[in-house]
Amino acid sequence: MPSKLHLEMALLPDGWRRDVVITVDHGAIVGIEPAGAANAQRISGVTVPGLPNLHSHAFQRAMAGLTERRGAESDSFWTWRETMYRFVERLSPDDLEVIAAFAYMEMLEAGFTSVAEFHYLHHQPDGRSYDNPCEMSERIVSAADSAGIGLTLLPVLYRQNGFLGKPAAPGQKRFLCGRDLYAHLMETKVPGGAIGIAPHSLRALTLDDLKWAAETWPQVPAHIHISEQTREVDECLAAHGRRPVDLLLDTVKVDARWCLVHATHADAGEIGRIVKASAIAGLCPITEANLGDGLFDVPSFLDQGGRLGVGSDSNVRISAADELRTLEYGQRLVHRQRNILADATRSTGRRLFELALAGGAQAVGRPVGALAPGKRADFVVLEANGLHDDGVVDAWLFSADNSAIRSVYCGGVPVVQNGRHIARDAIVNRFQRVQR
Image (cartoon, rainbow, N blue to C red; front, side, top):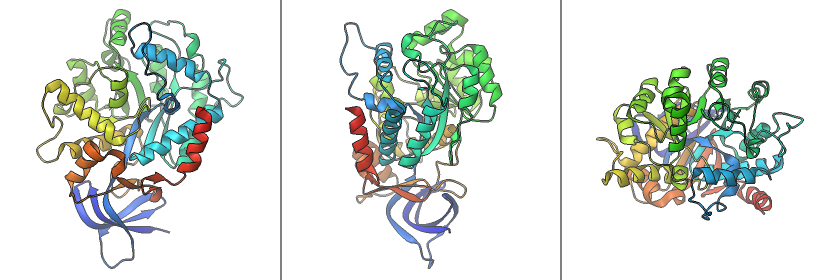
């Protein structure tokens, strides 16, 4: 039976509106109308669409706090990766499900209502396949269901350790995936969600593998790590005589279904090609800062009409507000100016938020990211604290962070109330046992 929710203040696609009623049926918004005499549950506060998280490695949430010591050599993404390889050797299917549920709970409490899970932990610790080859993928699906978050599952195709067929390292044995197994993984059922392809990176598979995946599944979301590190760019040039984004676009048809994760070191020409392809730049500001990756040229990208979204990636910290704040602050430090990403009609916070809504929705391939008929009824209710309109979003992103979030709804059902996930205690208890 349809339900009606009276929103005191809401951010709709055409701007702020006071006292509107949304009708929800089977988890989707089927109508929006001015509040009248109709009986509707009143939701006080400021309601905004839930933000899609376009890039997550859920298992890495349990690594937070384990990589902040400097080794004998200077630390980088590559040394962090070795720690990650040692960490994944310990994880069982039960562990993965518990850790993912905890990460997804935190995402919901932070204002993310859907997630694209870039999932590459396929095998047993010794590299052998599970009796059910989809065991680990199904654990991700189960974790998302128990937390109540919308899921786009992205099984990862991972074949090698570097350009031109460099053999895999021992720490990568749980990731490796041939074509037959990958086709099996792509049959994983994701009730109420979506599934897409995820060639890990240009260094982790051959160009023939890349073309095979893109051509075999031509209609689903397609995500790939690219140009995250300068070493990756240098090795790609040495192996193929082209920079990574150029090589990708010269090899397969890149269009609006593609999300190019990081693209940190794309040059001006590559940025123009991403824009022309209508692909999403999947930025992960907290992780990129934590790993010392560098900064994507956001102003130039947006000036050309580029589309972007944000993801929590390594999940070292989970906060929609902090991702967007770090995105803006990085550009301020580079350009030594304030409000770099604002425009003439919207505050910095609101423009960042609406860019990430649209880009994230495109990347996850689900009807989310807006309070509009036909979209999932996924939304976040913020404390106004005496502020109005854009000021509420700015206060959330630049000051209050997760404390601004009063409640979160997925499919019209409350999953966070008074800032806490409805199953928080049970999820946290299980996580703490696994982490110990």
